Image (cartoon, rainbow, N blue to C red; front, side):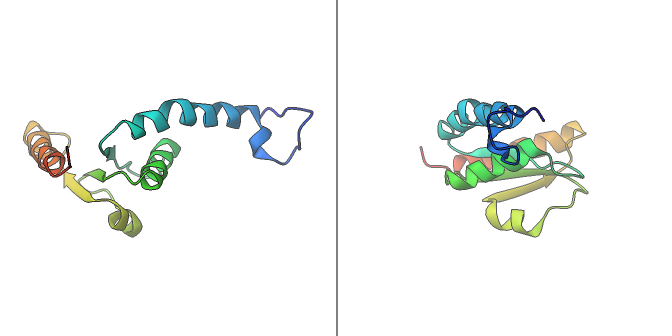
Length: 114
């Protein structure tokens, strides 16, 4: 972490790395979410990654419909099941599984208002 020497040393808001991350979210992620009808996210396997967590949180704050796509065998947190409008579990490794997922995604998208 690189600190601005003129700012409070314990306040992450003044950390240059955090400021760059915040700018990326403010200038990149948020405008994309605002312009989107919904959020479609691949739920990570194993440890949650920060990008997924921030996108999910901003989607909730922007009141966006959330479609969570989960690879078979992936553990889904109970609270994610509560906030997602739909959770699709499927096989993302075979052409048959991918085709099934595509159909379910289209079905979800058809439920969204124009």
